Image 1 (cartoon, one colour):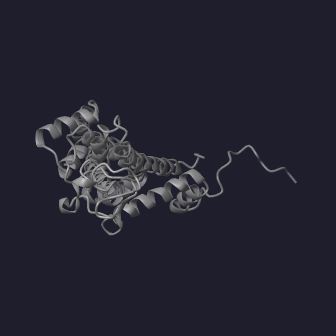
Image 2 (cartoon, helix red, strand yellow):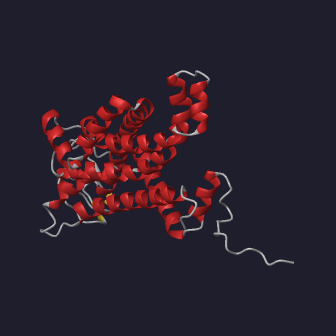
Image 3 (spheres, one colour):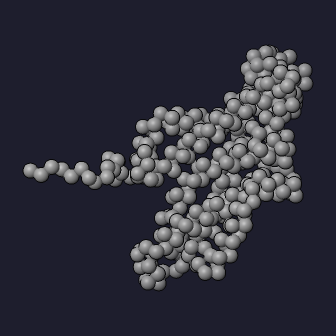
Length: 304
């Protein structure tokens, strides 16, 4: 009996399983990624339940007391409420502000990523399908957009249109769509050369049907995975803009604006006003990056 051939490259035992099972198994087999996914789920759940579990509505000026401003963590206020994370300069409960700030940061990150993803996917799909002059024009626009730092473009846009959650989302969409367009075009060009696309063209199927029913579902997977990491980038960009004073308004603070509000009090020893929102922001971005990185690697069978 001949010895088994051991020269063939080793392939993970789950390489032939459906993609969803493979991704879930890789997440379960890595404690760091599993912990990041659990942490991300907890943060999202806290943001969704903020109106229910927050001790105070930080957006309601009538519920704020100036007499309770800058109280240290664990101290009780004039109204008898114990502020476990302290209060800020306006007498706002920091725990409540962080929970609502999570909502704003996640809203901006998810909405901006979804908008940029839609525009980028459509632009890349059109460029790959039609080619020629259409492809050249779209890709020159993409190159132009990617040639400038995202923060600089966003600052210029917000300086022109003003502050607001909707305006921040629009600015981030305009600076992030180009990366998705380039990725989608590259993936769609690979699919465009395959036999099933040529067969669809030979059968005389409409171009719109070929793009939406064949190219799109078979090309969009890797772009969607990259988008999970870009959510963290969008949240970071919004926090930077808010810290610089051109992002979300003070009536609807995000984690970045909460950090900015407490930054001036760091030297006076009132660290909690900036540090606790900073910790929440770091945990949110870290968990998003870890989960997104694992999802991206899971699309490569050879990755460990």
